[in-house]
Image (cartoon, rainbow, N blue to C red; front, side):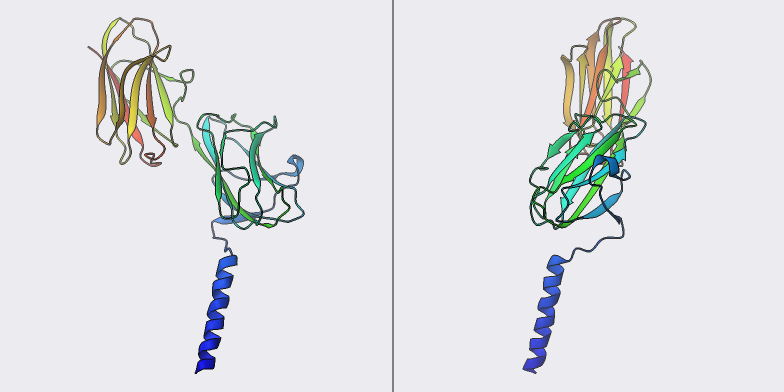
Length: 267
């Protein structure tokens, strides 16, 4: 009996050891091999999960993707699954300059994640970008990654703001974390106007501001929940440009239903 228990114990230990070091690939992940240079970079798709194996003799593992033909938001999400020594991650354009804002991409150790997002640094439309994994320490192992992308439905700067008029409902949607949407309003006559922004999302909070062309705050309401709204009366001058800025926070963002309604009324 003791021999049987010993054998079972050895089998259990072997299973536990294998479970520690074997990293199964889910059905959703596609195995790919990166190129050694930009010239032979492996083409990947946006919004698709990938896993790659890096060899100890590889200095670089390089992939490339093409951005949408319309304005969009992108985020590179990458996990060092089993590369024993730290690796470095870059997202660069054809100009060889770093793109986006990087978080934890330098000396990424085994079992940790990194991100490169474009909250503030947008990528050019219809352009090639490179995901570069630099194997500085010549180690081997697996890396999982994905370039997540979403269309930016509304203008996220004053320059790109969508024009709105009095008496019409406008429906918008935040499509990524900290999405900042701008709407432009030019009054046809001077006077008081009511600006209403209602949070119509199922979950999450938004904040709204009314600013002038110099980005000076006129009215605001910070982080209000689903069903609540900002109703701000402001004195505006004929022919001048004003902007309604509607933004969500990262932790409050909900992809399917982060929606709002904008309405402007002459008092």
